[in-house]
Length: 462
Ligand SMILES: Cc1cc2nc3c(=O)[nH]c(=O)nc-3n(C[C@H](O)[C@H](O)[C@H](O)COP(=O)(O)OP(=O)(O)OC[C@H]3O[C@@H](n4cnc5c(N)ncnc54)[C@H](O)[C@@H]3O)c2cc1C
Figure 1 (cartoon, rainbow, N blue to C red):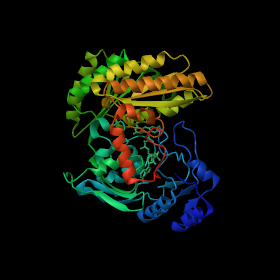
Figure 2: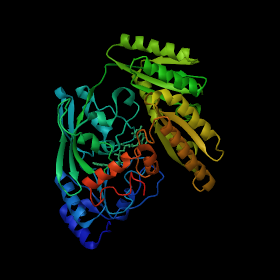
Figure 3: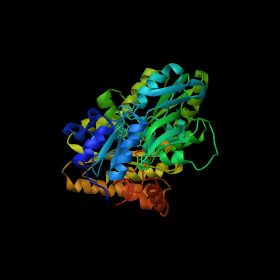
């Protein structure tokens, strides 16, 4: 049983940090009541901004004794309700633990606090020629990315957050602080606790410091935009590009309705048909030109009607920014609607079947609008489906569609969530995806957090 806070709790907690970093003011509570999803807002009872591991541990120790819920907060950019404090209690915002502590260029490593925004970190690291590749696009923090195992456009080549976490400092539910992992590039020592915490959505402990692996920024980039007659042809080309072994840095698929938005809001003048955006990184222009030639041949084999290659970084950045602004453009196009993102991933060989199934299922629903795009190189699809906020029939159709698409992804050997995590929205699919192993996840949760104070109401079905 978890408790609600009383006046004594407020007094004790503000003494543990400092009164000005402990707020139950209405606007602060409201700012930490919802993420970027449409899950209902639920206010915490207090927001605390710790400045050190010791402060995080002290708050956790107190909350553990008093059975108060504690939810970690990065930038609140999640899409499945992951940081919503559904049982009230304490939100610990890491906004003030936002320092880059040490860069070890020769080891390709950086030590950071969890509230660092990954884009700002990459900006500050630019002079070193190194970067942290996972790129969810939104203003995500390192702590939130670790907790959600975030990924993005470059994951097809560089991997997701879990591939870049080497060492973590974690404050556990009872207030103990542990160090996990090491700074070596490989290790076969003991159970892999590091990867138990990555993707655990702040339910096993709170990350207070991380050592991240960095990658070298490649000297040259090349990109191409390829238009296809059908989504199937485009997704078939993706499969052949991945199989060719040329290691693209991004392979993004946009259905015609998404291309139309890019033209309308960003003046791209692209052909309105299924389109691939392909990015390559490499040490020399010549090597990239050769790889791009292979990509062109594959696309032409799959009936690409238009193949536009380019070497200009600024134009590539403009395309990528437009791709990231897709959610914003959909909102602009349908201001009266609310929407969800159905985010599933399947093995690459099943991508064509998955995308065809999802689009046909969405098109059958008259009450909803649907936009399909995705990190195609990873077999990841985003189906953004919306309807008017009060259209009960529309929301019923969206729920049923979500169910059908996830069930199909699981039947194809995939997952209910490619990158957005489970949060509240994907809890109901956990038994179907994990079967008996879900019970072992619950046992692990019980071991680390016996009173269930950390981010309650997430991941496991009620
Ligand atoms: C427009 C848009 C596009 C997006 N595109 C992508 C994408 O391409 N790929 C992708 O992966 N995601 C994407 N996302 C989702 C989101 O940005 C990521 O999941 C991101 O990692 C969340 O980071 P955050 O800092 O906002 O964390 P929050 O949303 O604040 O929190 C996320 C989770 O982390 C926990 N948490 C926060 N800090 C800590 C900590 N220090 N220790 C332990 N737990 C903690 C929270 O309790 C919560 O469970 C997108 C979101 C938007 C709005």
